[in-house]
Length: 461
Image 1 (cartoon, one colour):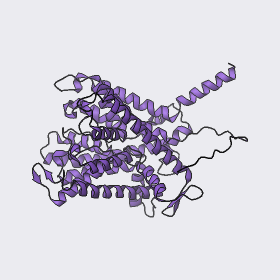
Image 2 (cartoon, helix red, strand yellow; image 1 turned 90 degrees about the vertical axis):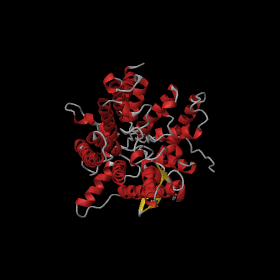
Image 3 (cartoon, helix red, strand yellow; image 1 turned 120 degrees about the horizontal axis):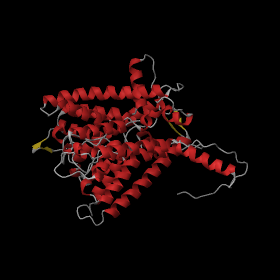
Image 4 (cartoon, one colour; image 1 turned 60 degrees about the horizontal axis):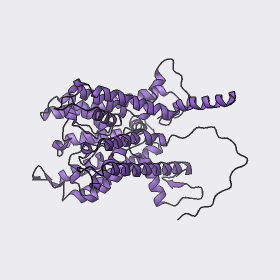
């Protein structure tokens, strides 16, 4: 091979090593491995049996990927272990966009335009190319919102006699904003299912964390900056999020109002209490992972509807997972509106370009393909597991929950085989990191082609 050929290979390898995808994967893998080692220390665990490293690894992946699926009870970790778990949730919840580029603020490291573009895509003020400022804004907003939520929850938990109310409030405040779903309570928030102040606080944190930092920044400026006009993306997110919450609450109220919502601790619930349960269920299904009722007791229509909410997830650039609200909205536009001759759709006096529609469609198809493959793999690994085999509904629910980084479960996670747990680990990682890297646009240099292949004619439909 000539010297020029080796130079091209080395150049390609160097470019690959500096690509956004590798940077993001490297950060998350490092955090997962570090977290698994810290969680496996004797000082982090107080359970009756020793904690297996595989369980510590599973917990670390679930925390960093802000999923919430668990193979062991979070309450079985010591306070030190729960602090480690909380740090992992925070580092993962602050978002791929922010922490995958934290190296930019370290002195001596250079930044390429391609790398900075990850943050610039979420820049609340287009035209200002200062990634450090964007990182500071994201961290400031995160800590401020989490701090307010933690303060309110701490006061509420203290009034209700919860042990260690301050730490419990901080833990749940961060977990809720990061849409992680981890709880210090063994039954999540089932003991607070009808507690209106606690529910409103948790729901507010979940919604805020799932909107996305650009949307939060834009809404804040709309309130405090006279004359500021909301961006088109913000309007779509607010409308779509509101529709999903209201539509989901109405659906769950209808399907579960005479079922699992009707009774709580042996007492019949009031219509207002059933409304509260319906709204919490609608909000938590989109990647939050807290549960105020046992998920296995939801009716079959409710569970199927839950699958849709789980795969949609939250907003772009948010702590939530899923295919994202705007992606689902574009798919909905294509399904309900005819494309014009340029492959565009129009909504709210704006035209959605064909490029965005194609990217949304491709992203959706890739996610669905991965979902099918992982579900099939899980069915194969658990075919001889007497505790899980044959429970198709629970396995489907588990797969959607893992890919959407939701964390809700029918309680089968600890019962999976070691191979099955490995499948869930890969699915959680893909749902948090892999889906995002799928939509990173390639920035390869386009070669001008004067001669190309002829157009292929394919029949559709």
